[in-house]
Length: 170
Image (cartoon, rainbow, N blue to C red; front, side):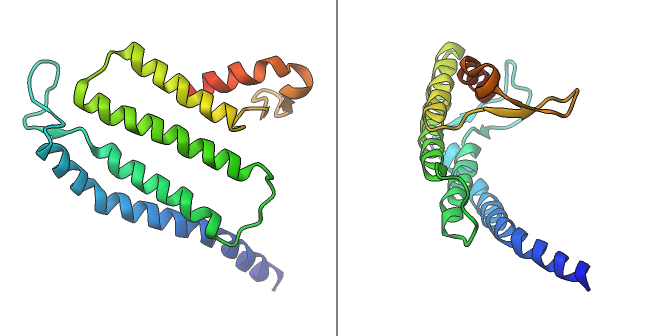
């Protein structure tokens, strides 16, 4: 009897996450063909030839569907009845959204104007720094060799920002 109760509780905790996944997945399925048609109509598409080996025009706008689906999932999550244990959750969520908008907006411009990699790198660094300023950082992790937790704030607090920046950009 105890295992049934435990399974029911586990299912109850998983349901909100499945709901967010289902909404985001469904949105991405519905929006991807629309984004592709829009990309072709606005001439945001790769032409065959040169290093591109495809045979027809391929829209570069699939990121629109992914972006909208991901943002919808983020915006739905606070409305769910979930335990809130992180006092900085909404600061982190705001930083994530701002960084997403920066990367998304630049990505659309890049689809149109095809910027050089150096500028793309700078924009990714800016978005990563927005995340870090919003407390999206790597402060603790498990050592894969010892399975012990490493707490950077205790042993090397100066490493938190560079490691977080490297991780976010990688």
